[in-house]
Image (cartoon, rainbow, N blue to C red):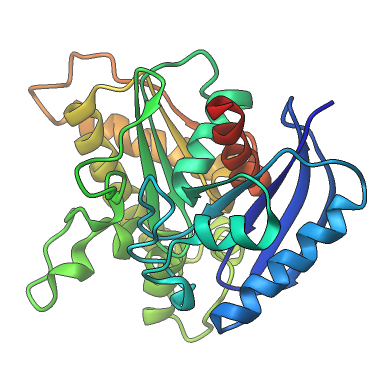
Length: 298
């Protein structure tokens, strides 16, 4: 069976795993993300060599934050500042002597859902990933739409609320993301700050007024962003990823907010909008999606 290595480069850790041609992940290794370019590259090489001891590897698929050009050049690299404006594909191919493909992390997650997850047999869909910010991907006719500058899917930059002081504070990133959206806004007003959205869910369930008010605002802002995307691109489904998407209360409340917004919007209140569903593949989606791009390339 043909084996590949999937790599998920994150701001705090780098995960590597053996992935077979059916998307099943075998052994995994990880290391903390270093700060400088050479240290990160050498850590990746060491993990690749470790996994190669298990058998022959046909190539490497890498999931990366930032704006990723089709040739593997990173215009930006998110939290991995040391990788900004380098051609990561060329660097890794030179180090590992293996074929390499580099994919934006949100795109990789969306591709994984198309292969093995919530978007199977769906040629046109949207994917949003809710984490520190809001990333996403637009899939048209089974292909990632990248845009003129490889910036398609930066849904977090959309302005969904007014902010007279700083326009960016009204974007979907600062209103709908889990960390700089939900958690940040809750901590602005709480005497007992949190660092995990699950704690806000617990406090809301006990009837805490602040938690419920923050959630009401959060769901409505996120719903506005999703409705804007739906009427712009007419997808068959909308897939929501990120850790918060595993929470059933979150998915239920989000769909209720979308339904409420639709009901008060005269131009769309009689339309059937696409379902908004949670992603299925969770934390391994980036590795799986990056490898799938490599498999499709052949």
